Length: 198
Image (tube, rainbow, N blue to C red):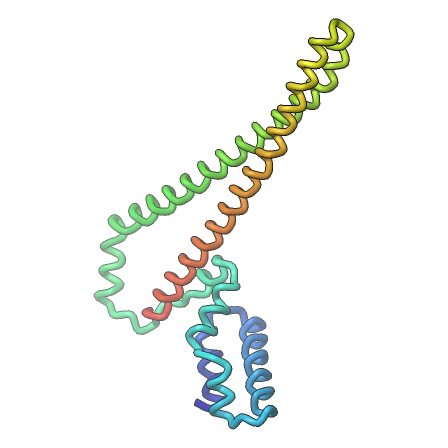
């Protein structure tokens, strides 16, 4: 494949993106091919060295927001009449299933984040309770040294547990964010595979 064929194919495969983004990507790969040609490769070798066009397109779409990928999907104009009839007649079946799927995914996602937010609230309560206990231990020392020491020690334990728990909850949040990104990439790849079939 030569440079113009590669760039033409890349441009057509990226048709769902905004024109400015298509131009940016095409110019980037054109410059990359030109750099390889300047290094001594012929045009075919330079195009082959850039990489597989399927992986390039998948990588570009993986970087785009999901709304942009979905919004750019254009239906096939040559859809048969019987396909349109099946889609319309199947609406009472496929739409509730699709809505239920998204409702379940959204409710699980919201539930997991609600648990993490409540864990952050518990951590904050431990830390603030410990700080309040430190302040209250001043009044405990006024009553008796034993009460003041016990209250101050319990306050330090609460602050320590709060600090340790904060790092644990923070790691859980980071893992959830990564899991969400992975889930988003999977959905994008499913949409892109579906788009190529349309």
